[in-house]
Amino acid sequence: MATTELTHDTIQQTITSNDIVLIDFWAEWCGPCKRFGPVFEESSEKHPDVVHAKVDTEAEQLLASELAITSIPTLMAFRDGILVFNQAGALPGPALESVLQKVKELDMDEVRQLIAAQAAEPAEA
Image (cartoon, rainbow, N blue to C red; front, side, top):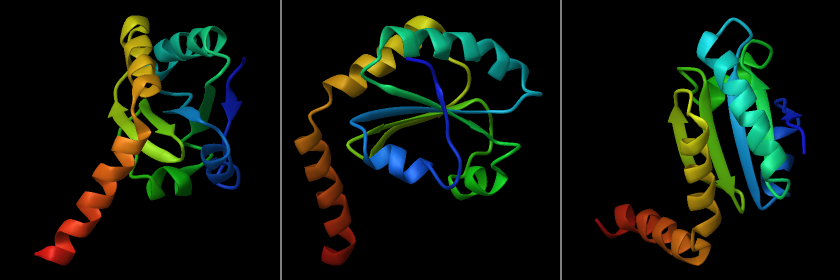
């Protein structure tokens, strides 16, 4: 499965309508982004069950700003619509594979419980 280009108009629908979505935030002028691009593309071929998407931060400056992208490349992973990974920097293939496996192995019921517990903490304080 090839990568998908996301825009401000398509990102939310993509995140909420797919089980796992990896998003590479990049720009044409970025050297590390160019080196990470083929690694990300190879992962998309290996994992057709995962949406591999890209956001061009030059074309989508408002979106990049809303998501607090301050360094590129940045990789975000969403599972069941929940952000579960967010890291700047180009990953080598084995590291990307490790991140993806960990995202797939997450117990999402446990993740939701943690989120609910964190949301309740300020109310109790």
